[in-house]
Amino acid sequence: MKGPINLVRSNEIADYINIKPIYEWTEDKTYLVIDQISYKQKPGAILCYYNPPVHQVGNPGLDAYLEGLDKVYEKRDELEFLILYGANDQVHAGGDLKESLNKLDATIEAKKAKEAKSASAEEIDELYGWADNRLKKGIALHGSLRRIAEHIRVVAVCGGGTRFGGSAEIPLMADFLVGDSRSAMCFSEAMIGLIPGWSGIARSLIKAGETNVEYMTKTSKEVKAQQLRDSGIYNAVVDISLPFPRMKKTDDREADKKQYSEELEVHNHQAGLLLLPMGLQIATCLPEEISVLKENERAILATKEDIAAEVERRKNPETYSGLWGKPLREEKDAMSRLGRPLAPQSIKALEGLFDEYEPSSFNEIAFVEKEMKADASLYRDPRFRAGLIGTLEQKVADFRL
Image (tube, rainbow, N blue to C red; front, side):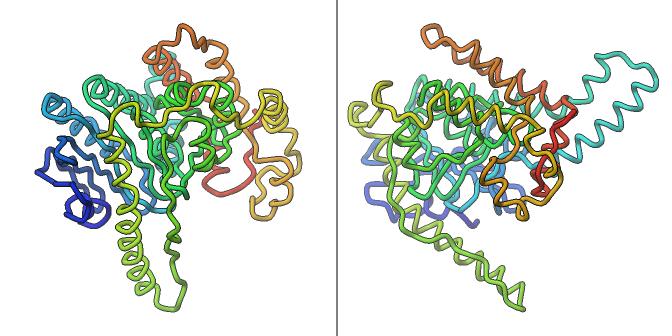
């Protein structure tokens, strides 16, 4: 196997012992492995997920997560901690947008056929089961991790660069997060026509507070590692000065790919030697030794007034009159000035969730269910396809009805 599992199964970290596998799943180059380990004589486990080249979380991977976490839960009385760990590469994606577009197009055609036969609303709604099932798996993953967290400490190590969608939401399900100084999180869903639907909003509310989460979800802006630390999402940031490998472009394409793969492997290992020890430290130290910001200590990423003004501008399709469908690379100046379009339906769904948020009576499980249902409804919005096309083709999305 390539990727981060090689460090997990090495003896290169002081006071660390890899004992045995608890669960293993592989599919082509993708794998999810959970190993029982000890660190400073404390028993625990590491869950290692790897899915190159951009580490998106597909449905088979979600099934493996759920099966593997069941194994961890069965051993909860033998463990003191669980670490979520993965690749330290530059990009960690969410879902497969090409797959979503293909399924959406097939659903739209099937919907037209059913409507022509006067099918019931229930029959038509069932066509979106592919989206509902993925959301349900994501929510089940949240439930599994939070159930485990009732018994042992759960720590996520966010190595590498920017995490989008589900690749950001999964580590947020942990109790504590360790960040790579080069890393970031981006809830880009509002530029596509969705919202974070795997508990990302609920978990961020717990860690960073309402205003910061409104900024992250409504503007879809990338939030860098130090901002994540200052706002309360990261508990620690490890300074990583290593540059990310870059693919060379010579006449020998195969040689370029081979060299890039080898450089990624070396980089993954070197970065992991810096990151994983911090994850192990936080997993095993006394609770009072972990840095957790109080509400009045959190930095505010933007004021509510500034967020509202920006969102009002960007959610109005007419702001982009004359730019619809144009390549983003040709409209850099306009995008820098205006920001990329936000899907009005996504903003409406987010506003509905925030309107219902009451910190004093917050129920995480109930809120997560609301997130899932709100996201599910957005898959059914006719403007969703425009967001997918705009993102995949890197064009200015047209969210006019």
